[in-house]
Image 1 (cartoon, rainbow, N blue to C red):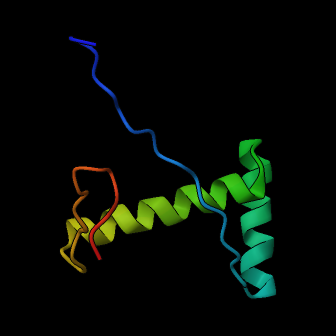
Image 2 (tube, rainbow, N blue to C red):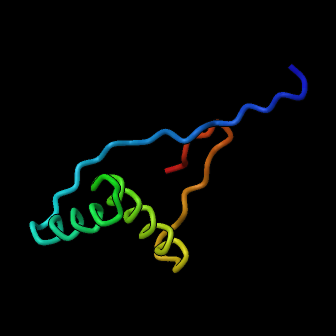
Image 3 (tube, rainbow, N blue to C red):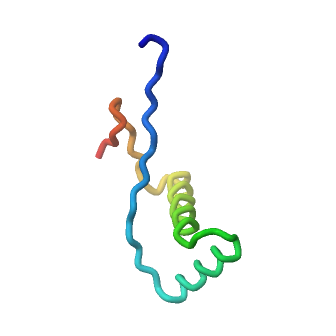
Length: 72
């Protein structure tokens, strides 16, 4: 159809992270203080760290291909 643009939506991925007990306790306390799930805060902090690293040029940003996949 003319005039319709297809936009690919981001898909969430699940990973497992091992944390020292003290870090986990701090993360839980911080999440509780903010009234949010611990995993939600952890995901946010990982995303924030990646954005900051990209801003500092610490790694190459992969570009999306026309089909929405990422180049390796």
